[in-house]
Amino acid sequence: MESRSPGCLQIGQELSLHWFLLFFYTPTYLTFTEFGDALTKLMDKHICNYSGRLLKSVTGLDIRTISNMKKGENLTKLNVISACLGIHIPYRVSDRMLQLADLSLNMTSPGKIGSDNETYDMLLHLKWATDYGDVYDELKEQSLDYLIHQPPL
Image (cartoon, rainbow, N blue to C red; front, side, top):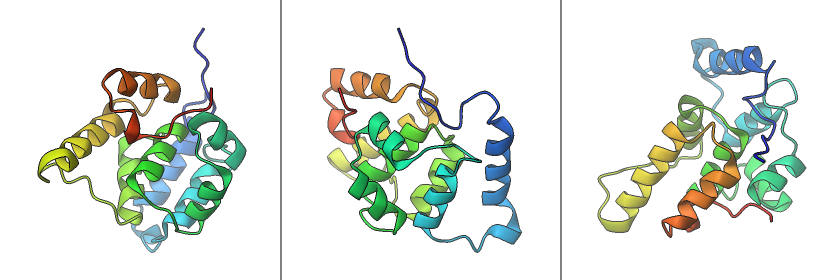
């Protein structure tokens, strides 16, 4: 039985997501430049309706890390991409979050870094609407489970 976590995909949340996309891409709001503020707004009950405890239960990110991310700290690819996939936000919003975190998915980087960035890009494009646990299981089958946080059992 597949469980579906709350987030931007919930029925009835489409207008909130639409509002958030407009918020992010309307020139009036382009002064919104802090990752922590963006994450806090994204998790708001009027947008994706994610508490820190819910994000922890979906992604395994601990409460301290989530709190630090809201302060603009601990903004690693592992943390930011785990949060984006856990909240189920579309690629365009995830890409903006990566920009705000000053992170790049440069796929031309040599070796493992470039390969990992390709996988991250694919995940954010194609798996954003997939259950987080299912994404983790697929990565684990390919020995790529180190790319996102392990969800709680």
